Image: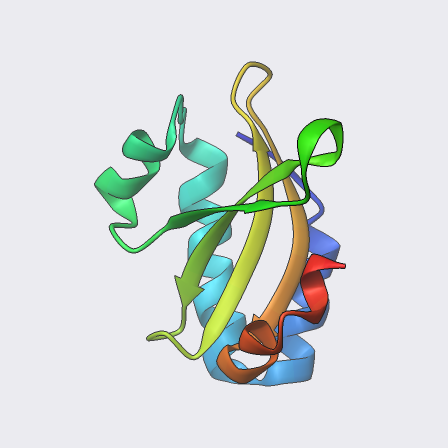
Length: 104
């Protein structure tokens, strides 16, 4: 997979500390070697990954959310399986994620 952008992962690691940094780096290394074709493929490695639809109709977007760092953080991505691209949208703490502001 082509990951866009690692910079966001590195910045989030600095913001949230060593646990986040280590977990995000591990995710990056696994994801860049992956050839995911569906959420089911992702769940072979990340069983708790989930799909979240946001918006309606033509404005609907589907995000894949990964639990990172022992469920302390959420990595929110948008994955384009056809061209093997992952867009990093947000890295949030568990509590920030549940506030739902990232959906706006």
